[in-house]
Amino acid sequence: MSSMDESIYYTTPLRHILDLPDELLVRIFGYFQPVEDQLPRLALVCKKWHHVLQYSGSLWRVLNVSPGPNAHIHYSLITTILKLYGHHLYKLVWRENSPVYENIFALVKHLTSLKLLRLPILWNSVVVDSLQNLGNLEAVHINGGYSLMDTDLENIARYFPKLKEVSLNACWCITSSGFVTFCRALENLKNVTLKINSGLPLEDARSEESMREGARIVLAIRYTVFASMVGVLCLHFVPVEMDELWDIVNKMTNLKKLSISNCEHLHGIRLVSNSLQKLCLFNLWNVLFVSIDGTDLRSVTIDAGLESMEHVEIYAPKLRRAVVNGSNILRTLGIRSKKLSLLDLCNCEELEMSSLRDMLKSNPSIVCIKLGSLSQDSLLLDELIIPNLQELCLLGDFACEALHVRSPTLRLFHTESETDIITLNHVYITANHLCKVALVGMPALKTMTIQCVSVDSIELNLCSDDQLLLDSCVIQALGSIGFLRLFDCKLNLLSVSTPLARTVVLYRCHVSDYVLQMALNGCPNISNLNLEKCRNIKQISIEAPPLKFLNMFDCRDIHKLDLDCPELIALNIGQCPNVRLYIRGIEQELSSMTGVVLPSESVRWSHDFPPQVYMCS
Image 1 (cartoon, rainbow, N blue to C red):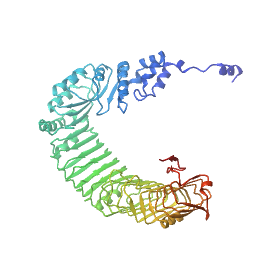
Image 2: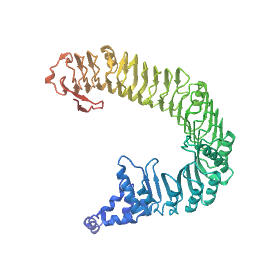
Image 3: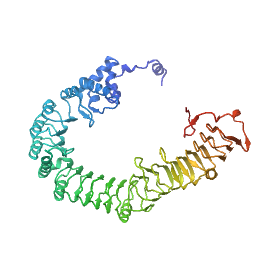
Image 4: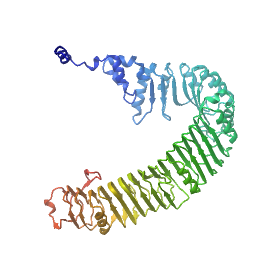
């Protein structure tokens, strides 16, 4: 660089942000969300920013309305945006079950540039007529109820001739002829979402006719060109037979999602589809079997209510997620997939174990299993059955008495926290590197054995109101234990064997002096030991060279504490009125020591490393 260039470089002043070109400001403002980041407020900064926001349509193309705790602020911003910048808006999407106030709806009908509209309101003739100025709409979601008639569908087709995507949800009064006429009137129609009888109120006298007409609609559309336009089909309370369903799905060559419930005429489900990606079945109490062949199927959910279903067979090479509620009647389960990663099984008390094992072996890609009740008292899952398992979750209906898991790839083992598992007595885990073991809600647990190379975190009986009575708790880690925390446990045997343990917490545990001493002897390299509120400990000797923090808060019965911990930084013996402290066999005068919470003090420590201090009353 020449000297002249250098002088220019150093003497030119930095430009102010207000001097930036409009194009660059638009690029910067584009990182803001209109509502979440309160984009309209930037117009108050200066006239330049006001001008940029007013005439930059790209900033206001999409508006998602999802009110949270401060709904009044949210709706105030929505009103401002619709008034000032609504002429730029292309997509307006309202979250389900969110209110649409009249003053805001009055603004919506003036959004003449709008191309997509989704409002959680009940459409009727008044709503249709109010929105007739939105002639550029290309996609609309319609909730009809008993208010929307065939004549209203005709008006929708006339007012919005550019419609390409239509979603009809819970339109209980439209007829098959009205629906076909509506589709024919839309020359640009490409995609149809049809949710027949969603939320149908059975107590209404008109519901019987809605059911019959729902069947006529889906049967009539299969013989038209519009069958290939249906991307989502939901059948609820629709009296269709198995062969009719087979024909319907075959005709809908672009069907992506299929949901079926409460169709009492179905005695079986057999489907073959090259387009279907998601399938949901529930409350089909007469269905005896389910057989699915889907080359593009990604997700299957068989929920509660299939009370007669004994056999399930699914062939889907791309299937990634399978959720099966066996309703305690399912006997055989066959799933063949090259990509299955999540398997959720519950209420499968009658499931043949040979069928389960064969299914697991044929899907080695499974990395997450959620297990409920099975027909076995003792369940074994080893590396031959689940070679790539990373996560195992026990659901509330898990009913085995013993669980043996041997998987070198296992990372996470936990329970569903909502419901207690009242039958499980014994847990044996063998793995390499465990990230977390979190077991709560297991009041019947008697034995827990964990063998691994290393484990980051083990938590047992956390936040439980009941004491857990453990005959044996054995944890062996060849490398290290990062965090071990037991809550409200009565321990008859505690064995912790590892070269290094960072933090060990026994909170409100009932453990004898001998059991605790044996546990500490097997794991002398603890950095942070927390024995808070273990009130039956009377005397203990701790020899742990790397120990830095020792918390004995509220161990009221302890009277002798003998320490040989040269690295000790802090000691908490608060609320231990009778304790006598010894360092390498020599009794200490507590008042002269530093880094010690005295027995008269109420200072608690957290379970972190290093522990955080907080006062208690």
